[in-house]
Image (cartoon, rainbow over all chains, first blue to last red; front, side, top):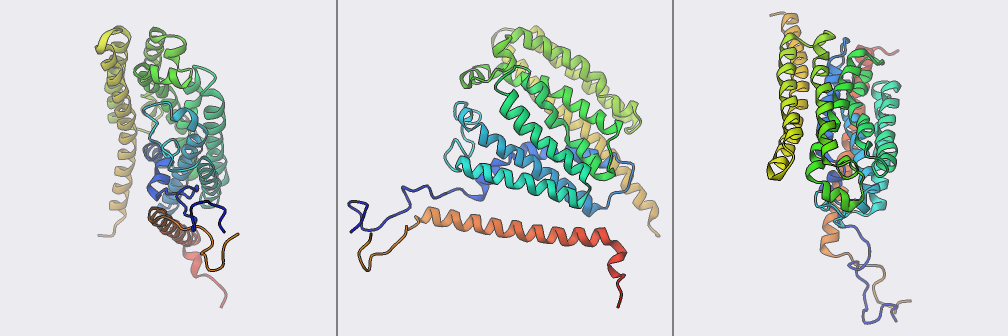
Length: 318
Length: 55
């Protein structure tokens, strides 16, 4: 006798046995965000005035990357209910039905603990504490609290994305410096115009999901004004690595040109307010803002790696 | 309750078997990498001191 009528053998097809592949779990870590975190943390490690053993540097960056991935997984766990409502996020592993919410929570929490402990053992406990705070800030302060309650969500929450250079610098030196704070400030001020340019185009989707993004709450014109104001602050702030002496004049010139272009793109968003052209301007700013941050940090990383390779060449006996 | 001779438990579908195997392999690789990483980090942290030990 069987409890399942009409079936002599139970199959797993109706039970919640996972069919998630490793790539689904990788998607849970938000690999694109992870790559940006690794890149900015690498800049933090490289601007450190001390020598870092390559193995320790690599292991530290890996721990920071996994910590960022854990934040992404915990963010997707908590936001599964609104991710399913937006086209941009509908195909994520949880709303797509590939990974259960419980599995995502367990996966994210395990990786969070593992990444913090690893960074503490490999580098130092200040860096580990900063990484733990970054994960806490992104998951609890931003995802659980600010994101659904205030149009300033990404302004304050942006701090989570700006921490990696500070964590990287702390992993290399065991302290926090003005140089790492300057990199933090650049990412922090860059975040609002970056996300609001996307929010201008995706306002309907955010509205459907009930997320109070600035264009939905204060209107598109107020958002355009704030984008311009942040760009005005960002352009000179981008020069700070050169002014503080940890980047070259070449960086200073690059930051000047990129800052001027950022202002130009933001001004176009401010002045072009209607029609398809307004959407195109917002999309252009979104795309350029990614290039802006990438090029600034690539210049810093490139300069440091070049200086490092020259030191190696000088020290070689032949 | 099941009749004598009837298989007990559930039977996984081919898709579930395949994904479970993939996850197992991925976990195995991750753990192996983690062990190797800690070994290399330990050697790097000890530096030349790794050879200094009482005979």
